[in-house]
Length: 127
Image (tube, rainbow, N blue to C red; front, side, top):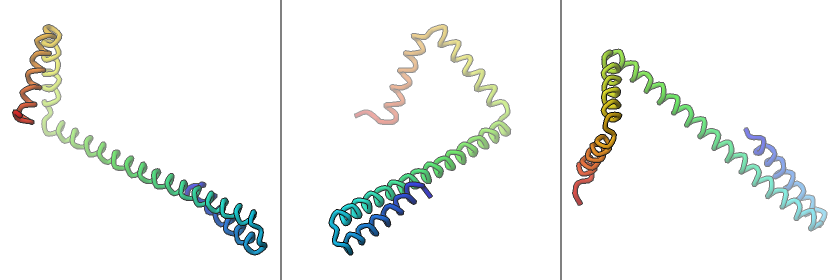
C-alpha cells in the first residue's frame, strides 16, 4: 500500500474529527479547517490509489513483455533446431544484397521504391 494512501486516510479521518469538534464547540473556523483537512486527505488518498494502480499496470505490462520475449526466444530456438541452415542462408543473402547496394546505390533506391509502390497497389488497390 502506498504511503500517500495511508497518510491521506489519516488526514481524512483527522479532518472529520476536527470538523466534528468544530460542530460540537460551534467554532466555524475549526469546522472549516476540518473540512479542508478532510478534503486534502481524500485527495491524497486518491493520489495514492492512482499511484498503486499505475504501478500494478506497469508490473503487469512488464510481466507480459517478459513472457512475450521468452516465447519469441523459444520460437527462434525451435527455428534454429528445425532449419539449421536458415541462419547461414539469411546471412549470405544479406551480404549479397549489401554488396549489390554498395556497388549501385541509385539502382537499389529505384528498385526499393518500385517494390514499395507495387506493394502499396496490392494492399490498397487503385483508387
